[in-house]
Length: 175
Image 1 (cartoon, helix red, strand yellow):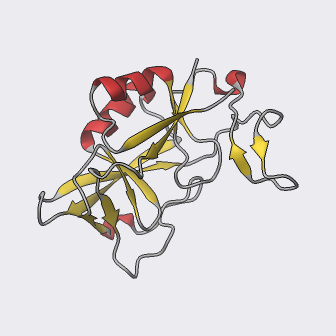
Image 2: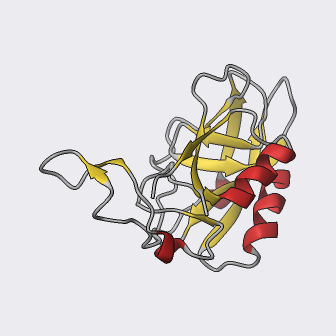
Image 3: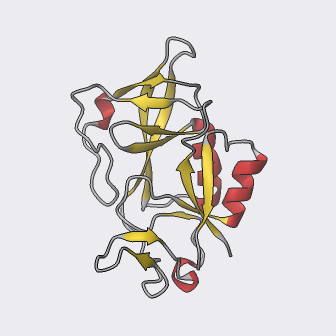
């Protein structure tokens, strides 16, 4: 089974970015920690169009209703992943509901012997997945980083097939 890290494509000039109010706490969504006050959050789309996956300047990953439905079709009801609805506004493209994609846990899937670290530290430069630990997982994280989303080969293919990859970059996670 292959796994891909899902990240926003910084070279794609199409996809926009969501901006939180300037006084909003940052980061707003840290994996394995409760997301606070999200019910009162209103984000603004700037510098591009709505895409199925967007990041936020205050530190969160957000997905559209369609991307949420696709991911849920693979993971089902999973108590370790939540999708928190927030309002997004755009003068050009209208208002929409997006979902903060938040992991309630950090999955223990890293192959510590094959992962590449900054010498003398525990800072990861290239994550390697332990296939036995990741067995059966379709959407997960591997470390407490805001942009750490890993998907299985079949989820990756479904995202590409539905053309939900606008503004996304997939990096094969070694094993």
